[in-house]
Length: 141
Image (cartoon, rainbow, N blue to C red; front, side):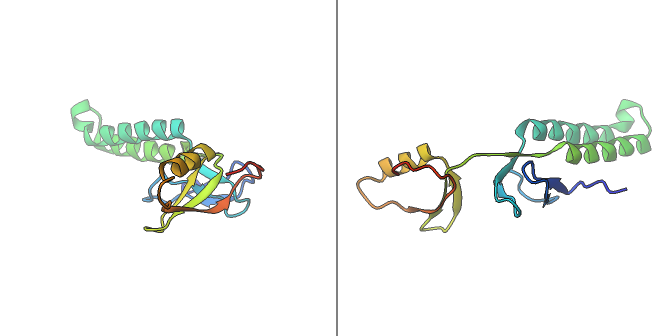
């Protein structure tokens, strides 16, 4: 039986994307097959965190709650598996991939964010540069 805890399907092309057990889960990811930008569903991530907390609480407080320790540990294991199974990806729409010239950090932003960066750096040179346009809009940037 394959639980597929660490691999999650892309909502667009259904290819498997690795979700690391100890990785930072706030990052925007790009699907290696279709190239869409993905982020974890925030509502499901909240429910997952609550399940994870309940499982840890049941295991650590099993004597205090009056349940046998092995049942508390079993509840913890089941809640951790459910917490990882419940999380999925959703597609996000961004317009640009930009890079900070000083730190080489890559970010994904919308057109309105880019306009704000341009307005704030109108007097001097911007420390950001557009690496890639993700939309096919013919707007003037």
